[in-house]
Image 1 (cartoon, rainbow, N blue to C red):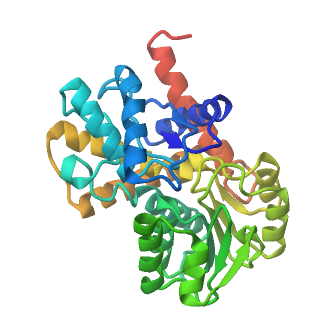
Image 2 (image 1 turned 60 degrees about the vertical axis):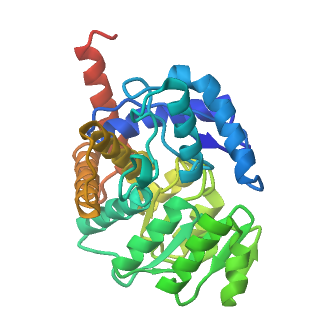
Length: 355
């Protein structure tokens, strides 16, 4: 579920279509859909956000349920919003079933769920690099965005020995020549998750360069992880990255790379991980949260992370299976993800008599 001024029917249709195949790639028994509103939570008080969430749920509750449709958060829908939505759903239905994922730990959530998309993105990129006998160690990484996905992609990339030198929001990007460290990452998390501030404030706090109105793709790096929003990486950005020697691009956001930019990366021999595969860790862990809710159990963080890592390796293996083309040096992950997801959905439809 997404709350953003850009939300319209067309965007929800293409995101929903993608979600079907992304969920199929997780190997978990889930369909896919997308919903949301053009409500903008930015600049709103907690009370205003709560009133909107409750008004929305007063209409939506008829159409969701643990065996019907289980929404999870997306842009503009974090733990606060999920809490308000799930709480009002419980009031209306008089049931405590798992109708939302991404819930707080105090009311049925899962450990690692907030980190899952960012961690999963890096696990998938790590598997892509491993195919070439490489790793994150010593690599310079560009990350766009500063929300949930970006934050934990930065954290996991740092843990694997990479130097992450950028983060951004809709107003511009920050350049960190020495890369993120734990202090700076904690400051970014507090700024975005508690104070709900802008990255320009983060730049001022640490005396860093801030580039207003620009995207981070002009910076020289080995790896690029677009984690902000759809169509944020255009053909001009792709050309700049290619010219600067980028080796790998993996999508943390939903379809952040335009078709023209994707084609440019593939033609240049850049390893490219499409979002339906690379950022499937979030929805996969939503599935794990649903499993825990059904069992009335909490798994440890280590157990959830282990399952997440396994799922991302399985997704990579499926992409490799369908994306390996004789005579081509690189696996075509775009083809692999599309075909693997389609085969799973088509097999299920045919088996159930849906033609």
